[in-house]
Image (cartoon, rainbow, N blue to C red; front, side, top):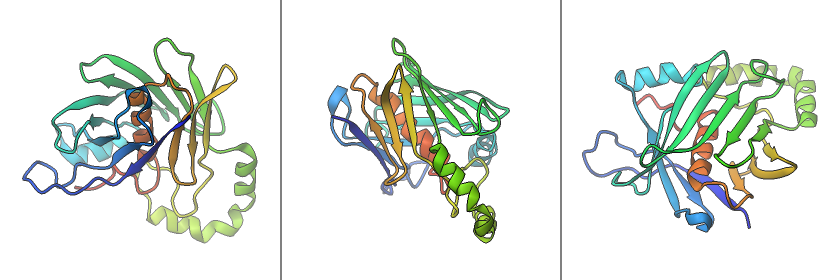
Length: 226
């Protein structure tokens, strides 16, 4: 049975901690493979604070902390950027003690190795899983309809944040990862849910992937100015 990961906006905090909000959380449909009911995520801000983070994310960089509870008492993982240049961003997912859980590589459309954004997910001891954003047929239909969406696209520009994908004129977003003929992972744009079909995918890697995917969407959870 697949484990379905869903992102929700996190609850407001009532204490005097540094941020008013912890950020969104990634919930798990079931606890298979040791997965908790939810993982709480937040931005790991650099020395320059929010402005520095927002400036870096425009190139594709991300830095994410993952917690087991909304009180930040137990960190379960971290997402760090190895490199982000030329439209290709490489991320490492680390465990609570700094051990490598897996890697995620995002190659932006027309800047990496194809016409569609490419996501590669790797976990030690498993074959790489490769997925492309959107199905080709839907991209063709989207491009054919593009002349009728000029006004919508203009509205999207005014509503966009650097480093995000899409907007009001949303392009195809479904991603199916493949590895040796199998589909271990699948992101469905309807409901914005990540389906983990392979039981041996580490739940921390799944949570990190969900957080990364949503950080590249319009209205991204990590793009707030405060």
